[in-house]
Image (cartoon, rainbow, N blue to C red; front, top):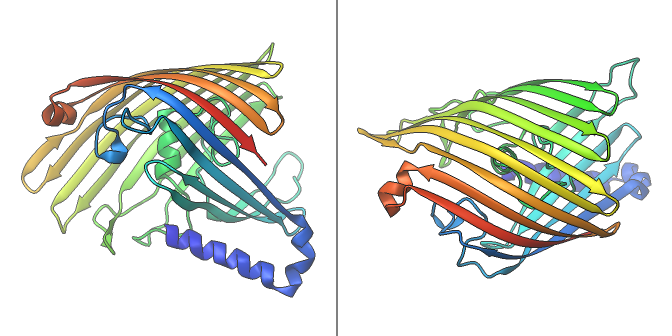
Length: 341
């Protein structure tokens, strides 16, 4: 996928060098942000280092980190057609810059009650209620929900897959004034679970998704998302087969008071995971829940300070077999500085 993103980015740069597009250079727009973190937590070895803990940072990580950076580029070729790219970088466990989005977008003027929007390239699935900030950041906390963490890390809508089978998603939206926003989505990447090319395998992923946002009086907002689906793989070269059913939901309440924002989130998640390797069956079922409380202070238009407490508990049979720990409760107190430009 990174190769496809790189190709699209190079096409953008080539277009900028063409004399025909020189007149549009004044419509080039850069936006970005940088986040720094300081934290305390009791998390064991996390998944970045081959463990089972859920948080990005664990108890062995240095407690002050330049957490992430993002650069968003827009080229408005016309009022209805533009090019957009997003580059992000995290510093833990290593510095890892990536082109996350690169696409062309066409959004003509609405006709009566209808508006058509077309994107070509690679971009995040338009699903998150939380991660609507610059650089796929959450507007309400540093740590996104399980649903949106998975969408941000694992899902990207791109022009083609390794198995040459186009997937699709269908979604519908209903809104009432600026009060209620309801969305439903069906997603099927139509991946061939037996495909294997250049060391890469294809997972066939299907899920249903629903989200609801309600804007209440006194600057109070209620958010909720629900996802249920299945992902499968059948690698004939190694004899490995995977079949994972997953389900997750959360409810988030947030309120803005002048320059202050207070948010609280509760979520539940579970996977029914049956992995088969040759003749052995390995059960990796997992379930868990988490609480999050966050406070943000808008110092200036481009500077925001925040503090977040997150507790997440999970039970996984694989962890019990390997580490003799059936469940783990992780706690993290994180301080955040978010600077935008």
